[in-house]
Image (tube, rainbow over all chains, first blue to last red; front, side, top):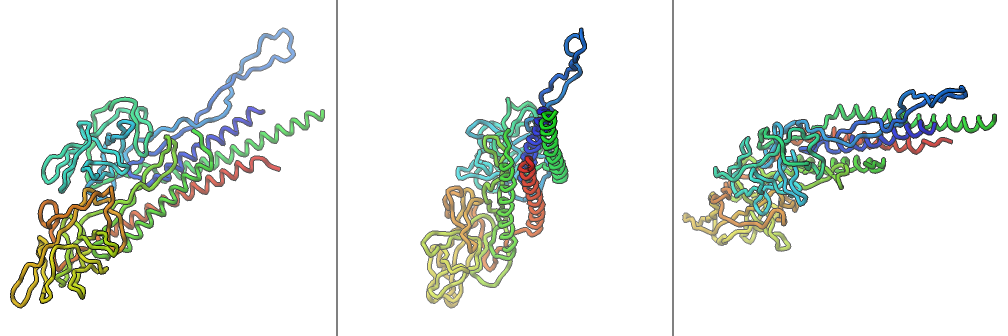
Length: 252
Length: 246
């Protein structure tokens, strides 16, 4: 019976973890380039259930019946890298990627990958993102942008006053869900070098918004609320049964 | 992943605080739809992670959107509009220089060119006492008329910044330079990358009402969802507390 108590409690803990991920997704519904975190539930630890032979004489060892789950846990979170909607902003250094690929950012911890295209030209004339990290070109070096009117082609080629000024580098992965991990705000770390050549188009004057689906999120939140409530009731029922068996068995 | 229920409340709270901040910026943009020389701002909000822990959202920066506003013709020769990049410099009461795109200038009693707010325009020259009329050409050259003769009185320089999106608002449609924007670089209008000056015109606000309204609507939806998440986490805390009955 203690097993049941812990199984019900594990459902409450898993419910809290799911709620955390959903709240984080809700908080970033309007963050450009944000990719929603996903979490699923899995049962952990099985224990074999055996049938005791009782007082039958001559019975052999315990009889195996099957496995009994001991509860549920939230799996480590993953990221949904599906395309978010593009919104037109008209800003010269707002860029969106249509299709696969990530912008390459230079950070103190090494190269990170992001879909957030809110860029600006810093005082040193280099292209940087809103967090101040430098955006890397196809050569793997920061991009120097001279003063003037900037135009960026779909392949990332930058021209300033009709003069070529470098090209924005994109990195693509064949399976970003397994190759990338959430590491810095809106930026991901890769296990190795980019594994794909297929990159999408860059759209100047657009931003890719978050891929959080509001309707889906609300649905998931309702199911978390009900599952949490049910688990809480189960803990109470288990507790009640345990209490009753202790008090009533003692009376015999 | 540890997830205290109270920590989840903080996530939703960060979203609600950011939402309010974003609403302030949007409201200010909408309030200045008809302000001459006004530039819309955008709140840049960013995912918040601490040691890879999900923490919600935070305000990263406020970005000045410097799209050109449309020019409106006026009859005042000292109504100046910049077409292209650049800012006028005006002197604040404390001696600092502030930068503006609001070119509604006029002559004060001391024959100084001053802005609508009364700050003196930074320029190189002097308006003679006998001047009857003033004119400014696209290159910033100020001329005055005495009788039938026009004479050159000086020039107006404009200022550019390495990263003008990071200028800091001072109020009254003025901006100050910041370490992130870089120092002001003075230059002659209509040369290099400096925009030209249009006399007898003002630059209208660059706020796009449709964009701001749509933004406000999606902001409201996002705020509602985070409020709902906050309430639900609160209910979950209450359920956890009431586990033990009697």
